[in-house]
Image 1 (cartoon, rainbow, N blue to C red):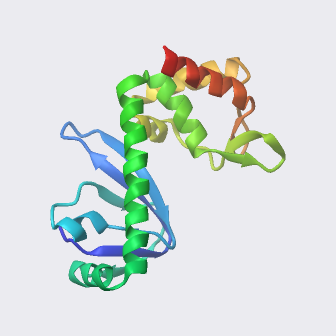
Image 2 (image 1 turned 45 degrees about the vertical axis):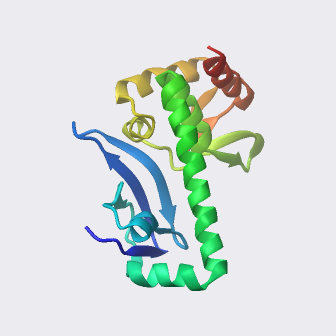
Length: 186
C-alpha cells in the first residue's frame, strides 16, 4: 500500500479490480510513457485497483507529495493530469453503461472492437494481435470463459470473426456494429 505515482519507463501493465469472491475485472492496460497511482496520490485513499506487470517493466516511482507539489506549481502538468482523469471517468462511465444495459454477448462484441485495430492488409477489417485468450476477454467484460467461447464460435459461424495464426480478425465490422446496436436498442 502506497500513494506513490508510478511512471512506466518500459513494459506493459494491466490494471485489475479483484472482487471479494476472487473474480477479476480488467479495467485497462498501460505501457511506456503512461502512469498510474494518481488517484491515491491526489486523495490519499487506498488504491482502487491492482496493477500487474504483463511484461518485464521498468518504473519510475514518484512520492505522492512530490506529485501533488508538481501539480500545484505547474499548470501544464496539472492540466495534463485533469485530461487523464477525464479520460478515465469517460471510460469508466462507458463501461458502467455497458455492464448496466448490455447482455454479456453484447459486452463481448464491444470489447472485441475496443481491443482491435485497423488491419493493415485490409482497412475494412480490424484485428487483435496477438489474439487474447478467452479468459482474458471474460475478465474484461465480467463474464465467464464459457460464454466468451460460445459467443466467439457464433461470430465465426456468421463470418464476422476469423482466427488466423497471429490474430483474431473482425472480418465484418459493420455486422458486428449492427449486433452491438441491437444490444443497445434491445
